[in-house]
Image (cartoon, rainbow, N blue to C red; front, side):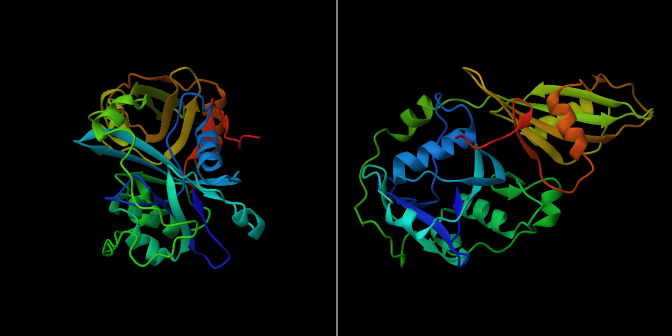
Amino acid sequence: MLFRDAAGRVMVVRAVYESRHPVEVPGGGWEPQDPTLRATAVRELQEEMGLRPRLLALASTDWAMSRSRPPIVSFLYWAEELGTGELAGVRLQEDELGGYAFVTPRQAASALPPRLSRRVAACLRTPAGLGPVELEDSLPVGPAAALLPPEPAPPYTRAAGLALAGGDRPPVAPPLDRETYYATRPRIRAEVQLLATDPAGRVLAAGSPVAADRETPRGAAARVLRDRLGSVRPPGRLLALDWLPADRPRLVYVFDGGLLDHSRRPAAVEAPADLRTAAVLARRGSATGPLELVDGRPAANPE
C-alpha cells in the first residue's frame, strides 16, 4: 500500500528479518483465507501495524520474473491518509517490523530496493486519473511505456539516514530460508483474454492460460493475438484485471486486441455477454488504466 501524508511524503517500513533489503512499503502476500487481494492488504496492515486501512484506487500491477524464484504478481494500492489518532495507535508486530517513517519521494526512491523503488516511482509519476499503471519487472509496458519514460536510478542507500518511528530493532533471521519460502507460496494461476473487433464490427474474444514460468501476461496476449486472431500488431491497452475467487483463484488479464483485418479468419468467438465483458466494453474507449474486478464486478473494499 501507498500511504501519503499531508506533505506528500510516503510511508515506508523496516522489515526486521530482511538485512539485505530492509526498507519496504506496507503490505504482504496473499493467503488462501483472503477472498480478494484488497482483503489481503487490509489483513496484512491489521496484523503488522494494528491499522485498518481504507484503500482507494489500484495504483499498479506488476508481473516480476526471475531465474531464482517463481514469478510474482504485485498489486499496489493507494490508501487514504492516516489521521493523527490512527498513527498514535500504531502497534508494530515485533517479529515483522522494526519501525516506520514518512519520507519524501526522493528518499523513498533511494531507500527502497531497486525493483520496488521503480514500482513506487512509476505510481507516483502516473498522472491523476490515468492509473493503474501496467508494469513488468517494475517497468512500464504497453501504452504506459510512452507515458512514463525511464529515469536514472538513484543510489541505493537502504535505511541509512531514515528516522524510523516505533523502535530500531536489529535484524533477525527469517523464519524460513529463501528456497523453502518460495516452495511454500501459492503459485500464480493467470489467464489472458483478448477482445478485438472484426471488419464487420463484431467484438471477438480469444483467450489462453499464461505459462507463468516463461511468459508475462502481455507476452501471452501477443501469442494469442498472433495464433488465434491472426494479427501481428502488439496487444493494446490492458483493459481489466479480474480476480476469480476459488480454492485456487485465477487472475484474468483482459487486453484490447484492436481492429482485425481480412487477411486471416480468426480462431475466435463472439465476445460473451457476461459481467466482465460488459464492464470492459463500456470502458474500452477511455484512456484510463485497467479496471479492477472481482468475478466480473468492480472490486470493493472489505467491510
